[in-house]
Length: 68
Image (cartoon, rainbow, N blue to C red; front, side):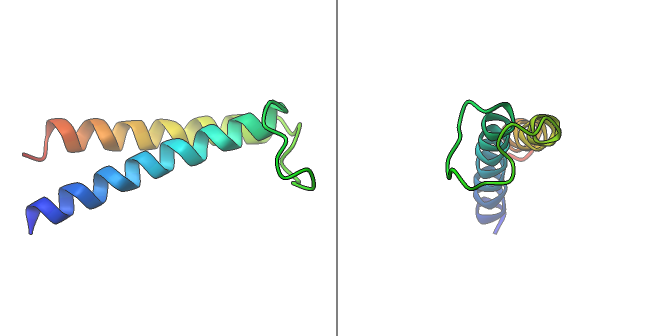
């Protein structure tokens, strides 16, 4: 049971990190896909993406360090 919990939290951490990086890329204009996205060149999405990515990285760190 604990193994499934650890794997699930690890996958969630990776997904949050990737989503945060995409949001940061779109907000900064470096990843303008899809072209009709409302997030392109909108600086609030850089900060929101950074926060989501940080949460994902912290979750990965906690899973690797604390849940054994």
